[in-house]
Length: 399
Picture 1 (cartoon, rainbow, N blue to C red):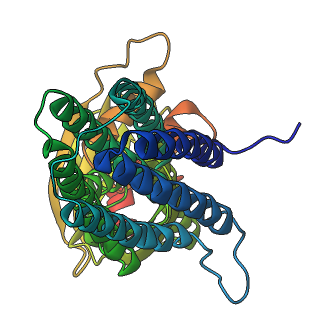
Picture 2 (tube, rainbow, N blue to C red):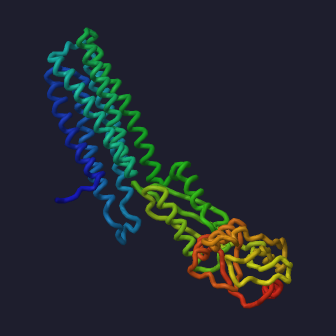
Picture 3 (tube, rainbow, N blue to C red):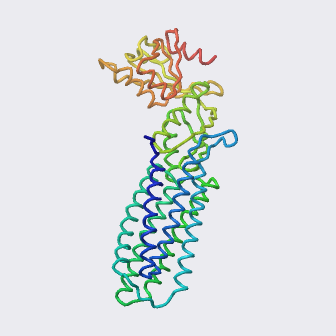
């Protein structure tokens, strides 16, 4: 059995249900003489055409990119939404025109049937609009969401139709035509919202501020990102395209590439329907590099370098200016995890990350150990040494 994607299935359901409503509303509208019911039938027929357009738009937008259209066909959905808005405006115009032309006291016939149809239309339309809005929002489909909003406007229109027919039944014979005019107000309002959203996407307007702010937070939280220079994001159909320009102290191209992959992975895991994240990386000229060295004691430059990373009694953390290699801000941090039986290396690595170190110099290789992955994730560089004292390490850095 052929599987139909959820958004296309929703469009097909909409076509079938709305076509059924058109048939019964038009038939009973003719029998009863209700202008509001006939106008609502015309409006619903426009919905059928719109839903067919949405289905076609979804089919087109799901096509794979080609050489001529390397960015895909995602905006086909927004183009369909644009025409859908124009169809809504036209339907509103027709309803106003019909109601004004026949604005006279008309006593309806077969009122019971007309009331039943109006009630059934209201209930079915409410269920259908809720279904389409749910699918559209979950899939971030602009055309399906637009169609759902259009159908939600129909709920109010159906309620007005029902009131107009009931009013006519109670002797207020002009209410049926007034109901037809009021329906158009709901229609024009819905059409304006859809038209505005469609044009914004087609002109590559930015996505909403809340989503932009969330993207900035996600990228900023990745270790290695020093600053975000620019952030742009736009919608295309149901998908989002993001462009970031970040500043990092990483020099190694492979590590910078891993940083870029990490940012993209985090953004896509947090936000739905992000199709592509383009990241431009700008290396930063830091004023200083921050180093960490495990030591067995706190004797300043005479301190011995520890052979064991996790069991070091102290860690010397110091800064060296990149301009003249001047040593600044040397301090010793006592290892609070030295007595732990397990995971001491992991805990030490987390401690060093909290001190924002740029490079770790050790005698012991920590490659592929738990501490290694913590530090690597924080974009900390590594260097192994064979010298015995802290002074010798700093002397080599001065050269």
